Length: 116
Image 1 (cartoon, one colour):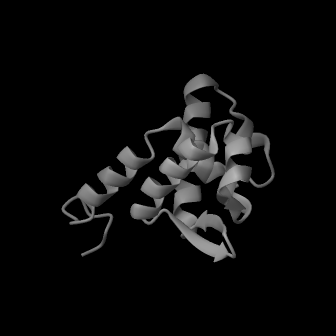
Image 2: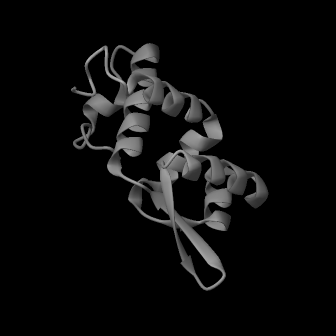
């Protein structure tokens, strides 16, 4: 059965993914990881949270298979597990822009359709 069918068994899982992303810090983390992998400390600087807080959010995103890791010595690097999380978050941001403007900024950007 197609996953986009209203009777799809994936609907409940999709709701869980939305719930996982219903946190501003997690959305910021996904946005920060769009262009490649980053360490916890770098992510903490970008999202302006403590490394401990970012690490907790990353653990949840990892359990949800939204992010994946790579270890290099004692450092752990995080990346998006696939392109869909970035696209989902970008589309949510675009929808938010539509809610606030009749002429959202993403319509005037050359790569508006990209997950960037």
